[in-house]
Length: 623
Image (cartoon, rainbow, N blue to C red; front, top):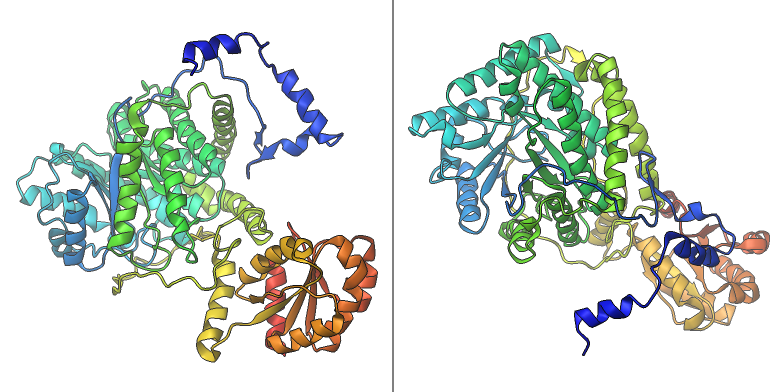
């Protein structure tokens, strides 16, 4: 067996490979096709090349120190305070070193959340030693804003040292207004309220940070990385100015603000986004005459990527998101349990969320190296592109008068809406894949358990005197899930799902690829595929279709077999009563002949699957 030294010596006998060498090989494979086919683009239009050289001279982005692990936050959102307390104690005893207290009415509550009353908070924190080094992060909304004050009073009542409590208070009226699309107060009226709360908490001895610039507002609404970064910058600057206007020195205000970003399953973009925010905020600090200090960045795994169907895949998405945020330098990470889109997560889902972080930290040692992406050509380039483009959008927001004014003018909302529209189109065409929801569905998956709980209902918060376009949260899988829900209802009512007959022609070698594609295509919409062993005789095909009980049919085979059998087979299916006949694949020059024989539509990769499925449902329901 050769040693590492021998291997290196052997490698030295070969000439070093260059970019030009690689490009010649690639051009040979492309055979005249443009190289741009290999260049990807983000939703912001940023180019992603297939290969990058090492970034020479790149320095690590200042953030979480090497070997300093991020805080393992665990979401506490059970409406029953006693149950929430039991969950909090269990989480802290089993690896979590921080609690994200999600109150009803907060942007991230997603239907549940804690009761913000002083009595409930006392129950939730019973037995929790909040001055013993654990992190506490509050996610509050206008209706639950008093939770921050109640927790401060709880600390005082317990006789604890506020400076020993690591509490991020989560004050964020801009984020709440952006999601709601309204505000009872103007920005000049909001400023004294938030600065008064911050000054009061600081006077009690809390070290903060107090105000949160929350990028999840943009990410949850379907926005892009650049839009999320610009929103965080503009929101953070608005709070920085507000705090300074209250007579607090900028050097002190600097530590009173923190950021929150969404981490999703796109590894490179997530890593680059977290790195970019640090560089962008340092630029803000320098422009303000401050010496840059590492901004505290909290991460939440993304809401919009969660699916109700095949929910266990959410574990994989969360793992990639946690991996990316951790390597990108997040100071704390809160993993959304994999069943959150279905309801209130149970003990197993909470344990999986907690252990996702524990495994990556304790077994994979992800925190041992500070900014491991430093010097990576691809990530360094992407980081720089995000910085430049987000800074331009931030300047646009500033020219509009700042964050609140830009919301009034729908500046950021229009941009997010445009991005969301493109994103939804890519989901519909399955260019952006959600495994288990838009691809590879399982119509027979077992039901996933969630807890039964009664959500907290809070009183309305003020009259919406100032209105603007809202940025409501969304999940990408919802349009496909709605079709699956209709299928489940029919199954429950009648004992059978809507069906489509796969009219497989020829041998398995001929039809398997397209039959597999067709099965996945239709079952993502809840239309069960009836498979067959293959036909050569149109009469036998027609009889099998009649016996299947299906209303729709889809021809599946190779182009060669289609040329010989598709016309006769389509006529036979039409005569047998098929309401709508599809053909899997592109028809090419035979489209007119196929349509004349009874084929109505062609399903292909990259086509609008959602529109085709919605049309199929309409046809079945009209019959």
